[in-house]
Image 1 (tube, rainbow, N blue to C red):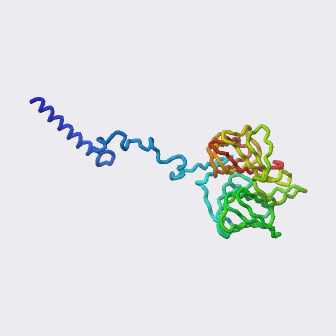
Image 2: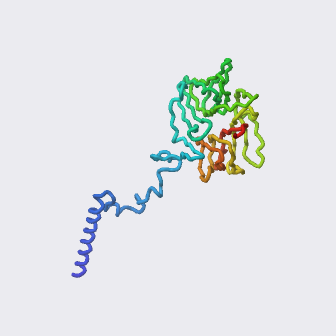
Image 3: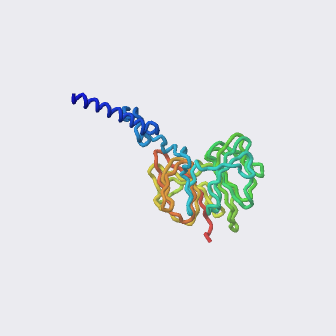
Length: 303
């Protein structure tokens, strides 16, 4: 008789426990009696930790997320934070300004998306311009009627007050640098139209990267554009600190850039502004070549 009573009591406890679970959790949506009986590892509590749904390459889908950073002496501007709007006086063209004097720079760097039947406008008086083609092709013409076709990896430098126009029949994506030319007595720069592959590799004593300069190094030019290539694992030996300003666009690959006391993972499409004297250093990562385009002011006394 005692065993029958104990068995009945145990059954009652199970029923009460079952009702208690449903009462406390089932109506709250947190748990149910069915979940307690589920097979092991079915809908585990921390499933998102074990199998995250937001992988690193998809972080841009996270609301409010950006890798862009702005500091007193540097900025990292990444694609998910670009804001495109019509470029003033350009036809059928959207632009995104990445670097401007508002950051403390003495130049501007912007991306331009040229669409069907688009055309550039002239820069302001005494402003020089450099255009590098990232996608598509352009037709460049000058005031004398001379025309040049620019495709990917081609570029053009136009001195201040040089009459010219870029037109596009289909679409093109370009990066543009502009600055107010710093005149030097008895020196006048000339227009340059060329491509990266036509520029010879230069010596880089103490360094391992490959360097090409896209503009002449003569005193007539107050800035230059460098193309720098790093193989995976290569890095700058010099931890640079100098008076020159930089505007950088990573064209290929990925790596780590040190700016001041901060370290930034960067990848193709990222842009960087570096103010004078900010400590800077780069190392290439990944399995493919890392290439970036770099603006640098040159040939002028800092005073």
